[in-house]
Image (cartoon, rainbow, N blue to C red; front, side):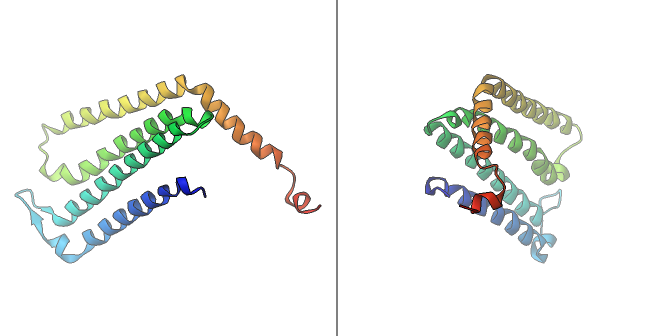
Length: 166
């Protein structure tokens, strides 16, 4: 693995640890029994909300850094930076709805929920349209990158036995 890309592992480790640690802490008895506010939201759900929100923020930061690194690279991969960022934004926007709703539902009045739903619908659709636009405008670069990867595999498409023999 190229050392300039080793930072991806650090982000992934922190994301996984945040998710696991949030689940473990939320399952402990003090966090399950302690409540916050008149809606009686458990401290465990607050811990999970913070852990999941942090993991989503780190995922988006990972996508942003990856896009910046792709822009700095030369060749057809540099054109994929916008695609990566748009895809990660769509994933984070769609996942954020579930994370927020799991935490805020006990405190949310029924009259406000449709407005919150529509805010997320607009946000998710905007991210999806951005991804489609980027795929449309950068489709040649995407096809060229996929073509270069598949042509590299075709060079070594001989059976493994033939590759070992001199």
